[in-house]
Structures are given as structure tokens and as C-alpha cells.
Image (tube, rainbow, N blue to C red; front, side, top):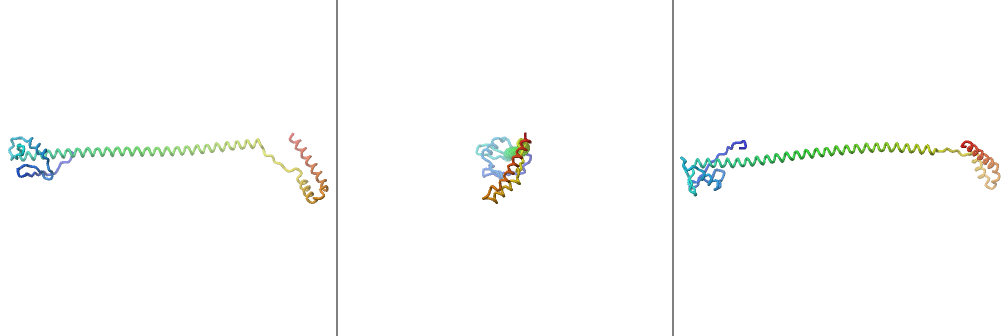
Length: 199
């Protein structure tokens, strides 16, 4: 079993009663030895050993049984090793699948996150554009409703002359009355022109 043949040599040693109890390098339990002795045929041609239990076992038969027991034990060990190896491979495969799934999930999350960022950026850009356009329209509407009026001072040159006259003649303000009359006449004339244009 297991695909490899054992190259181990098995040698036996006998104790003082000619009982085989030691296989070189492997100590056998009494149960194993007893089982081997009990199952041996009684009519063997080779030399026999007697045991404490009264059964006799030939040397060759004992060697054969020991070899069978060793082969059985080795087969069990190889079977257990194969089972452990298979279990380890299965665990490794499951771990690889789990890692692959985790990697895929992380990658999908990154892609989704990047897509969301791109969408938010696009929506923000669109919102800014629409808001700017709406603001521009509102500003144009307000400007068209409330036009700015340009005004120019009426009779500015006469106004300047009157102020200079009052500064120079602080004690004699009546000397500026002719300029004040001209200014009043100019202002009334400008009012009259505006009323005619607006009406």
C-alpha cells in the first residue's frame, strides 16, 4: 500500500527459552506475539519454539507472521499518512479558494468605491454647472428689472461757482445771490426737461 515497497530487513532474536521477542529495531508487544503463536498451524516441518501458553510456533511461521504484522502496521501508518496528507491538501485548497474569494471581494469593493467616487464627482460637477447657470439667469433677471440709472449732476459748474463765492464772502453772502438765482433757474429747467422725457 502507498505505492512504495519497504526495503527494511527484519531480523529476529530469541531469548534464553528460544522465544522470539525482539525484531531488530522494533519491539513487539506480548499481544502481537501471542496472536502470531496462536494462529500458527501445528504441523510445521521447521524448528518450533514453545511459549508460556503452550502453543508451539515454527521459526519460519513466526518470521512470516511478524512480516505480515509489520506490513499491516506499515500499511496502517501509510494509510493514516495518506489520510492526513489528503486532509492537509483539502485544507490548503479551501484556504486558496477562500483567499481567492476574499481577493475578488476586495477588488470588487475597490472598483465599486472608485465608480461611486466617479459618479459623485460627475454629479458634483453637474450640480455646480446647473447652479452657476441658474445664478447667472437670476442675476440677469434682477439686472434687467432694476436697471442702473446713470445720473450726472445738474448745473455742476454753477454749483461750484456758488460754493467758491460763499467761501470767499463768508461775511457778505448776499453778494452771491445773483449766482444763486442763476443756479435755481438752471435746476428748474433740468426738472422740466426730465418730466417731459419721462411723461
